[in-house]
Image (tube, each protein chain N blue to C red):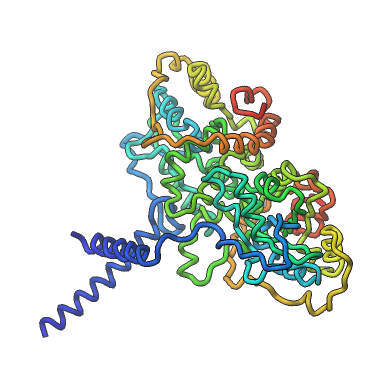
Length: 287
Length: 281
């Protein structure tokens, strides 16, 4: 009797374990929580108030957004509550299911701030997902949007080294290469963004310029956010943040040549859209 | 050790044993066939490059119904030859090997149709090197219909596993302008035929006659029953689009279709509800 109930018990535990395993595999890395599984913001510090974000960074991965986000947060008038990540990834899951008023309120809960301070986040994938800009306009209609663009060939190489390899676990090299390539086609992403937000509400920065003249570009960023630009001069702009870990993967000459040729027409389209905000001489283009 | 960790370990062990038993998965297409006597090999006469879920299996079967089109027995419609050529260098031997997949009797044309080639940004350039004289076929379909066909599931369990990355991937597969820019950058325009699934459905005889003429085939009339044969129909269930997603996808595709209108003026965008909704016709 005892042994029989023991067997039943073991079987029950294995079935339960399989369910846990299935759930954990399903909600594994790179997979966003689905609507219904609420994303909950950390507690609001006492004396702070919650409001829609004042700024949201929306692009783009492997382009120095963690570095720039950390510089922005060195400004004395910008706050981020303990436990709030740089990347909230709030809208990833809303490709299906409705984004309700309760969801919008849940999003705002990430942006607690003391009186007179600004708060925001920076999820580099927002610009890529076609469904996100309209949702963001609904949840944060007055937010200033930030976009940091980098030479797509370098972005591709950096993504290969770390981010996309990790996110695309199980994906074939072909699928990973295609996903990485798509992220570097910026013109369509910008046009989709501008369909939901006025152009003057969006600041597009070029990573290579930020590297060359960090203080000037940081002042420009602060001014765009409606902040005093002066603190830019006192911030340690050279701090290295979120550098690619592990051995760097480089591209073969042939791969690089293919990428440069394939991105060239797309880069020209971005340059036409951005005018003086983008210097194509800083990006690899065919000779 | 927790139950979950133990289960995980067992699953990993089991799958490793399975892989040892099966050996490494073969990469790319199977070995090319031996060339039968009195046939010759050479680069394909035509290569279909896109688009996924746009009726390419149906259209390819109709092309092969022409008495002068030949496909070597047992060879798939989709060779996927270029799929693996991003991660390893291209050599002249690859071109020779590609040609070996295409034996044909004298007087016949032969080719393949892999709808993913148009997505693979490295493929159009390599196709132009391996088969510089090949005619390139592209079959397009309303991008929103293509999106829904591309994002199917078999039941609620597989539906739950679909992630936002699948949705994002299905979306950019329908961005045709950038894909065609890469095709046109690699192959002269007169060597590329862009067809519309909706036009093929409406008048298959007319569109097939166009296709045959483009391929340099003599005009033949196929029995009408041939056109109605279903080939590779979508069996999965389609994901329901919320009104919000539908309108976001429509606006996103409108940006692409505007470029497509300039890039391929011969397309009749009035056939696509997504283009009509965007006021592009």
